[in-house]
Image 1 (cartoon, rainbow, N blue to C red):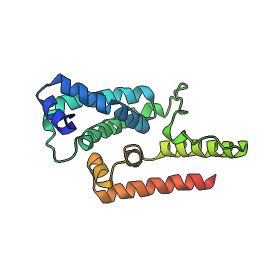
Image 2 (image 1 turned 90 degrees about the vertical axis):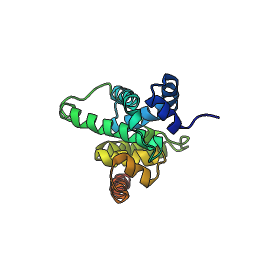
Image 3 (image 1 turned 60 degrees about the vertical axis):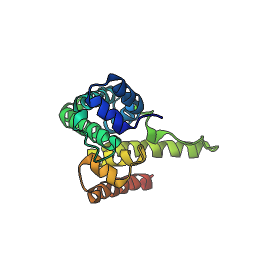
Image 4 (image 1 turned 45 degrees about the horizontal axis):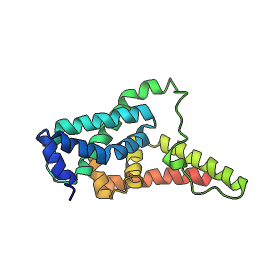
Length: 187
């Protein structure tokens, strides 16, 4: 039987490298996906998710088991993403990375193509507009949406990750979804 994430974290606190490797294997893909969803840049997502694992290794002793390990780890990751966005906001307004390809966005993935090319074009335009609307959401709103949609986290878990009340999470989700709904209705 596989050890729980919480047990592995306790072993990591004692500098058990094998336990750390197991946690990295379990969470690496999800961490990168969540970081990319928040930062929309593959290199930044890779760097921030790697930094999250470094912080995990250094801070494993501070995990008290009051929440699930995943909640604790996602809080660490989301905070790093928010910090990264704050630190790098000023120059990204002036410099647009020409290599920034957003075509692999999870929001742009669609079901099988429609038979009618007009429907397909409309759907592509709608998904592009939706992806752009997600990019314009406030960082905490985007984090709440991505934790709900990608990680299927409950409101109380998102509240722990974002260090806010469940009511605040519901407000973030409501405002984000209202904004996204308006974007889709405009199409």
